[in-house]
Length: 131
Image (tube, rainbow, N blue to C red; front, side, top):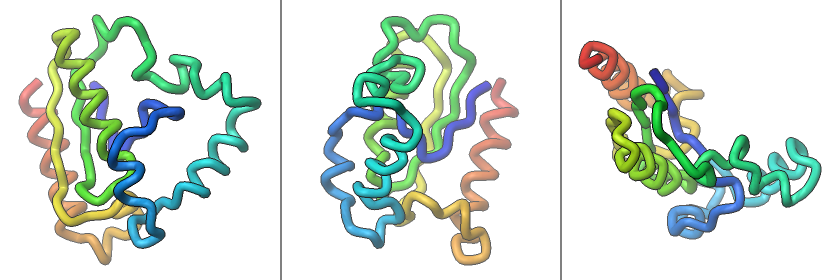
Protein backbone atom coordinates (compact mmCIF):
# COMPACT_ATOMS: atom_id res chain seq x y z
CA UNK A 1 0.00 0.00 0.00
CA UNK A 2 1.15 3.51 -0.80
CA UNK A 3 0.11 6.45 1.38
CA UNK A 4 1.45 9.63 -0.18
CA UNK A 5 0.99 13.02 1.48
CA UNK A 6 1.56 16.19 -0.55
CA UNK A 7 3.74 14.32 -3.03
CA UNK A 8 5.96 15.64 -5.78
CA UNK A 9 5.92 13.18 -8.65
CA UNK A 10 7.48 15.17 -11.50
CA UNK A 11 10.48 17.20 -10.35
CA UNK A 12 10.81 19.08 -13.63
CA UNK A 13 7.08 19.51 -14.15
CA UNK A 14 5.28 22.81 -14.55
CA UNK A 15 1.71 22.01 -13.59
CA UNK A 16 -0.71 24.91 -12.96
CA UNK A 17 -0.71 24.63 -9.15
CA UNK A 18 3.04 25.37 -9.09
CA UNK A 19 2.34 28.75 -10.66
CA UNK A 20 -0.86 29.36 -8.70
CA UNK A 21 0.68 28.97 -5.22
CA UNK A 22 4.05 30.76 -5.29
CA UNK A 23 3.70 32.98 -2.22
CA UNK A 24 5.42 31.91 1.03
CA UNK A 25 2.06 31.66 2.80
CA UNK A 26 1.42 28.41 0.91
CA UNK A 27 4.19 26.68 2.83
CA UNK A 28 6.72 25.95 0.10
CA UNK A 29 8.40 28.64 -1.99
CA UNK A 30 9.65 27.94 -5.53
CA UNK A 31 13.19 28.93 -4.54
CA UNK A 32 13.16 26.39 -1.70
CA UNK A 33 12.01 23.66 -4.08
CA UNK A 34 14.76 24.68 -6.52
CA UNK A 35 17.36 24.57 -3.73
CA UNK A 36 16.16 21.12 -2.60
CA UNK A 37 16.46 19.81 -6.16
CA UNK A 38 19.93 21.33 -6.62
CA UNK A 39 21.05 19.86 -3.29
CA UNK A 40 19.65 16.38 -3.87
CA UNK A 41 20.57 15.93 -7.55
CA UNK A 42 23.84 16.35 -9.42
CA UNK A 43 22.33 18.05 -12.45
CA UNK A 44 19.09 18.87 -14.23
CA UNK A 45 19.20 15.57 -16.13
CA UNK A 46 18.78 13.70 -12.84
CA UNK A 47 15.40 15.40 -12.40
CA UNK A 48 14.25 13.58 -15.52
CA UNK A 49 15.15 10.16 -14.12
CA UNK A 50 11.94 8.15 -13.61
CA UNK A 51 13.27 6.99 -10.24
CA UNK A 52 13.11 10.62 -9.09
CA UNK A 53 10.21 11.84 -11.24
CA UNK A 54 7.93 8.85 -11.02
CA UNK A 55 5.40 10.28 -13.47
CA UNK A 56 8.01 9.76 -16.21
CA UNK A 57 7.81 5.98 -15.82
CA UNK A 58 6.47 4.17 -18.86
CA UNK A 59 4.35 1.75 -16.83
CA UNK A 60 2.52 1.82 -13.53
CA UNK A 61 1.25 -1.75 -13.80
CA UNK A 62 1.54 -3.88 -10.69
CA UNK A 63 1.91 -1.05 -8.19
CA UNK A 64 0.17 -1.43 -4.83
CA UNK A 65 -3.03 0.43 -3.98
CA UNK A 66 -2.45 4.12 -3.38
CA UNK A 67 -3.99 6.74 -1.12
CA UNK A 68 -3.07 10.31 -2.02
CA UNK A 69 -3.56 13.02 0.60
CA UNK A 70 -3.67 16.37 -1.19
CA UNK A 71 -3.87 19.93 0.11
CA UNK A 72 -6.07 22.36 -1.78
CA UNK A 73 -3.57 25.23 -1.41
CA UNK A 74 -0.38 23.37 -2.34
CA UNK A 75 2.02 24.05 -5.23
CA UNK A 76 2.38 20.26 -5.58
CA UNK A 77 -1.38 19.57 -5.68
CA UNK A 78 -1.58 18.92 -9.41
CA UNK A 79 1.26 16.36 -9.25
CA UNK A 80 -1.03 14.19 -7.11
CA UNK A 81 -3.89 14.50 -9.58
CA UNK A 82 -1.54 13.48 -12.41
CA UNK A 83 -0.19 10.51 -10.42
CA UNK A 84 -3.71 9.35 -9.58
CA UNK A 85 -4.63 9.53 -13.27
CA UNK A 86 -1.57 7.45 -14.24
CA UNK A 87 -2.37 4.83 -11.60
CA UNK A 88 -6.05 4.73 -12.58
CA UNK A 89 -5.11 4.12 -16.22
CA UNK A 90 -2.93 1.21 -15.08
CA UNK A 91 -5.80 -0.30 -13.08
CA UNK A 92 -4.24 0.43 -9.69
CA UNK A 93 -6.75 1.01 -6.88
CA UNK A 94 -6.45 4.66 -5.85
CA UNK A 95 -8.19 7.13 -3.63
CA UNK A 96 -7.44 10.84 -3.49
CA UNK A 97 -8.43 12.81 -0.41
CA UNK A 98 -8.43 16.58 -0.90
CA UNK A 99 -8.09 18.57 2.30
CA UNK A 100 -9.75 21.89 1.54
CA UNK A 101 -8.33 25.25 2.62
CA UNK A 102 -5.04 23.75 3.80
CA UNK A 103 -1.42 24.47 2.81
CA UNK A 104 1.42 22.07 1.99
CA UNK A 105 3.09 21.43 5.38
CA UNK A 106 -0.07 21.14 7.52
CA UNK A 107 0.98 17.79 8.99
CA UNK A 108 4.05 19.44 10.55
CA UNK A 109 1.75 21.50 12.77
CA UNK A 110 -0.83 19.10 14.23
CA UNK A 111 -1.71 21.50 17.04
CA UNK A 112 -2.66 24.21 14.57
CA UNK A 113 -4.18 22.01 11.86
CA UNK A 114 -5.94 19.54 14.15
CA UNK A 115 -8.96 19.04 11.86
CA UNK A 116 -6.83 18.55 8.74
CA UNK A 117 -4.64 16.01 10.55
CA UNK A 118 -7.79 14.23 11.70
CA UNK A 119 -9.05 14.10 8.10
CA UNK A 120 -5.73 12.60 7.03
CA UNK A 121 -5.84 9.94 9.75
CA UNK A 122 -9.46 9.07 8.92
CA UNK A 123 -8.62 8.78 5.21
CA UNK A 124 -5.78 6.36 5.98
CA UNK A 125 -7.96 4.24 8.27
CA UNK A 126 -10.80 4.10 5.72
CA UNK A 127 -8.46 3.24 2.87
CA UNK A 128 -6.76 0.47 4.86
CA UNK A 129 -10.17 -0.95 5.80
CA UNK A 130 -11.17 -1.01 2.11
CA UNK A 131 -8.26 -3.26 1.12
